[in-house]
Length: 426
Ligand SMILES: NC(=O)N[C@@H](CC(=O)O)C(=O)O
Ligand SMILES: [Zn+2]
Ligand SMILES: [Zn+2]
Image (tube, rainbow, N blue to C red; front, side, top):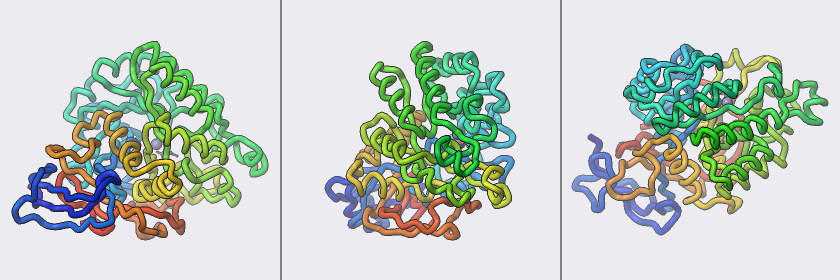
């Protein structure tokens, strides 16, 4: 078991500074004997961050990331749990595959690695994967996603929603109609895609799937989660659906909260991501929706890629960017510095809501006595300049390189054990 811990003077969820006590991996109400003291004067204590959307690349692409290296990046980013997407090779579409990812996460021992199960066999979009067996496995899979691909066939989506309802599962959808955004689509469709000569990926290709899926969720009385929302139109649909009482949740990535289409002018493939970066109007709508709860959570969509998959002409490069290590700083910069969210709000969108959506009962919460001691200590005043070469990820496709951001993770405590102290892995 972990060594007892006293964390002094932390502003808990941004409130009054107080001391936190940890013994046997849980929060307790008085200082345990022989405790190690962690000075948290000036720091904000948050419940450990939970990422609903991480790509770890193991099995299959261990040159880009492994469960261990991705867990390191997660811990440095203040995360204590991550949901590992199913688009590995082989795909996580069986109970055995899910248990393997779970076990690799336990062996790494830095965060809870919760496998996401594929919705369809091999992400093929046709035949449902072993949803029930994955749910009943040791991995207790609750989140199902074909992420990287959209569950496009409405009958398959309907059946998946009906199926997961029985065990309180959720389908996390990569909303991209492949007919509206063709196979080469890689740039927000607009004036710029025309000027750059890049195939357009129109917002409507996302919005029509979001609209369809909220209606399927209503019809099946099941639960849908919209991954990486990127347009103002999707926000409108979500706002309407929530007002109807439809069981829908949504996430936005840090990059869609700050980066825009304008960055594509130099054809730098580090900015190639799915869904694509969007214009200012969409970014503004996403920020407002996160602040007012229409979008429930921030999720990184951490998508590491080996150099040889990224260093191509824009049209040929892989989609995706790193996100775990920088997520909290980006949210602090975009949402806290502007006053759109306070630290309790950050706890909500980066820990409590994602834990609830994923059914991770030991995460989230509000740092109450008796709860597992998963926590993140943040310096709200730290000014950091991101250096891609300082990353603990195996990959370097970091769109934040050389950017200066305010607010940074200082310490991470996972199950009572510090995994990161002063920004460094223990
Ligand atoms: N976001 C991305 O651009 N890429 C993701 C897949 C996905 O999230 O759709 C990946 O697996 O690389
Ligand atoms: Zn996706
Ligand atoms: Zn993804």
